[in-house]
Amino acid sequence: MPTELKAEANMKNAQHLKAYVQMHPDNKMAWYLLGKEYYKNNQFGKANYCYNQAGEVYEAFERSKVPAEMLQQYEEGLLESARERQTARLRKRRVLLALMLLLLMLIPAAVAPGLLPDSKGTAAPVETIPVALTLPETAEEKPVSPQEPASLDFTAAASDAAAGGGGLAAILKSAKTPSATALLGMKRSGKWLLWSKGLPLEATLAKSGEGRIVYQSYNPAACACQPPDAAELKQQGLNWQKQQEELAVLWSALRAYKSSKGAYPEAAQELVKPFPANVLGGITPLMKEAFAPLRAAARGEAPLLSASPQPAAGQDSGTPGHEQAGGGSPAAGPGEKLFFKEPLAIIVDKHSYRLAVTSGNVILRNYAVGLGGDKTPEGEFVIKDKVVNPNGRDNGEFGSRGMQLSDSSYAIHGTNEPDSIGKDESLGCIRMSRKDVEELFAMVPMGTKVQISQGVLPEELVVPEERFPSDSPRNQTNPHKVYHWLN
Image (tube, rainbow, N blue to C red; front, side):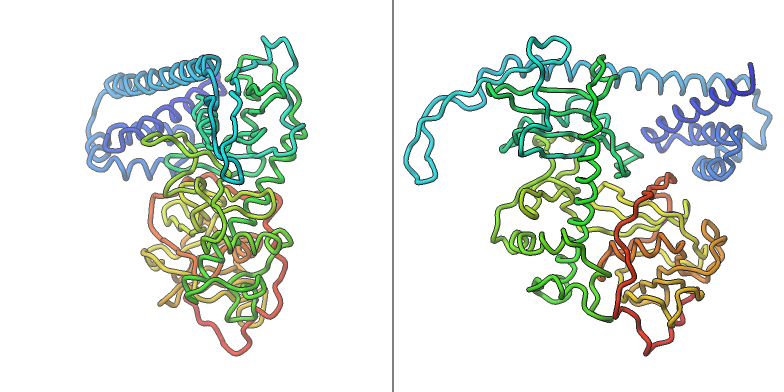
């Protein structure tokens, strides 16, 4: 077999075995075989991690003379099981999508005829609204473009859930289905969903002028069709993602302020006071505009709206919901809805040398960091102080930003040794590159929870080219203190 084809086969085997161990984390033999596949691909760090998970199985098989054919037969059995599971999963998605489309065509009405109270409390007749489905490849009329309605909404869900129809079904079950909704797909990585910039457009739902619901898939593999051009919708999706990040930061800052002060701030400027009262590093125009409605919603003075569909009881649609980011969130600015319900949190993984910004089960950022091995403490902390140019310099040992961890001499900070990122060369602190630490400083408010542990984050980086606004904040230095963090 040519070298290129052999390498490709090894990568596919590793992917299947990785999926298998995610489903069967206690199977030490599977961990051992996955490690051998990584070793063949020269991914020695991943191989060593798998060998550690394999424990005594690794020791037994490496020291014994087990015939290679026996290991190969066992591995082929696991791979076959993983492939069958993947095939069954794809088949199930297609069946669910077909059933959903059939149900949509058979539903007689969205609202039953009768009388409902109007805005004045008097009974008013309600017209039955027929619900039908128009597929692009079979429609007699051109599907309604989601760009035409004024109330275009976006949401996001796991790509596999969207392809299987779960995300779309949840949108249809929503109490307030908008005139048009676009669904973006997030990649799964274990228990996490990755919020990368430019999430792919999976599908749209729109109400036609005749009251019908028009479904358009933008995933060729899911619809077996050639989707229309989606350039404008994709740009709108990018803008929506940018807005949702800013709203998530503001929502987290409001929660952090309330936790610290016992009440919500009366003005947005209270969040960006000079050090040491700088809850945030800065505030954007959108955050200023959304401050009043978000605070009102947080106080319970405004209705709670959601930018993501709620799954049915006991059902996981792959969309962040209860105890996750998303459903039941406060309304933001005019026409805006908040996607990330859970406050932002920081997770540091000592095994993968990663620091993630999360909301529920969604990873918004996943940075590479430098650590101190056993000197880096594990446990739960909060961001205590946020300081620009620690010790008066932006190019010193602590870089241009520092965020001290509560009740400790450790901090998350920049570094003048960028080559130490991904290594254990600090005395316990968490080192970041300049761009990364400045973005993190801008995104997470003072009081953000920090969890340091091992083996909890994926290795895949989630770092966009266009960063969160992170201009150098004024009045957030501390000339009255010399920091002695354990760098």
